[in-house]
Image (cartoon, rainbow, N blue to C red; front, side, top):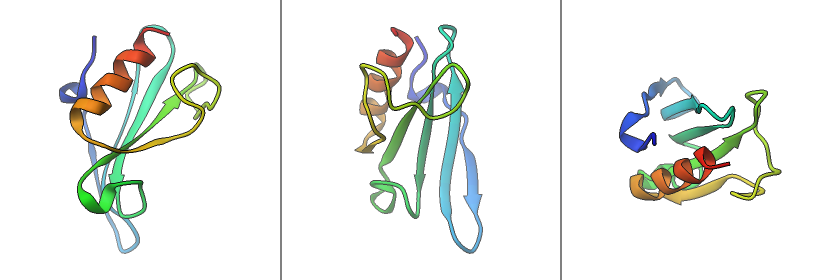
Length: 88
C-alpha cells in the first residue's frame, strides 16, 4: 500500500499560490490529489487536503471514501484516505 511518505510533491511558488501538490494513481485505477497551499483547507496551518481521482484521472465525488474534498488532514490521516482509495 502506498502511504504519505510515497508522495512526490511539486512546489507551488507563484504570486497567487504557495505550497505543494501531488497526484498519485493506484493500481485499481483510482487515485488521490493531495495539496497544501494558500487556498486549500488547512494549508495555512501546514495541513493537507485530499480529493479522490476517478479512473479518468479527474476529481470524483462518487465513492464510498468521500463525496467531497477532505481537508485539515495530517500526514497519517492522508495515509488513511490513500489506503481507503486503494481498496476501492
